Image 1 (spheres, rainbow, N blue to C red):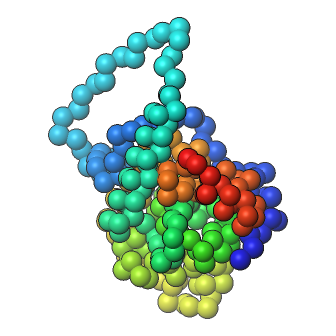
Image 2: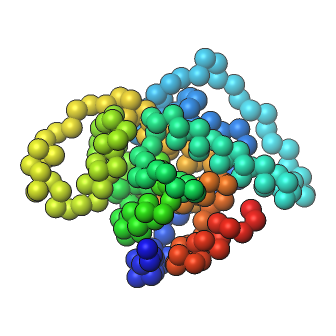
Length: 235
């Protein structure tokens, strides 16, 4: 399998970054509330009691994460992603049975996600690829398209995900043009993925994370050799 440099060149030039940089926490849990509904932006689950955090203490020398802190944060991120993937409610699994796993946060309405999609499909031939769909770019449009997919049986989702990126899929299968049913569970899953994108401090879409919790830089995905070297390097 050879990754396509042309696709990644366009991806590097226009990656969709979030406006703010959020430090990686160590306590986020995809499977806990509250979360915000991706369509009407209202809380899906309300906390039993709302509490205001204590104001941060300003100092001249803000604390910096040590190498050990970063290692523990990466390990926790990998654990949380693995647990959420095993739950099966929040993800699309493109492939299984490989030695290593890649996690992708992607929005079908994101232009660079569409550019990157053939590459991630190619990577699925060598890695377990698990997708966490989010609504970062498409908002309610993405929610309408993806929520029914997350309500489908797990073994059907990979094909449905590919169809989201296939312009001709609806023409070849007119049945897919029918209005999808409402799917509250799918909307809830998307909302939790959106929350994870924020709380994990991920920079935007698409973002690929290795199974050891490291975000994979774009230059590491320009060739098979570069990706293997990155994954084999010490975290």
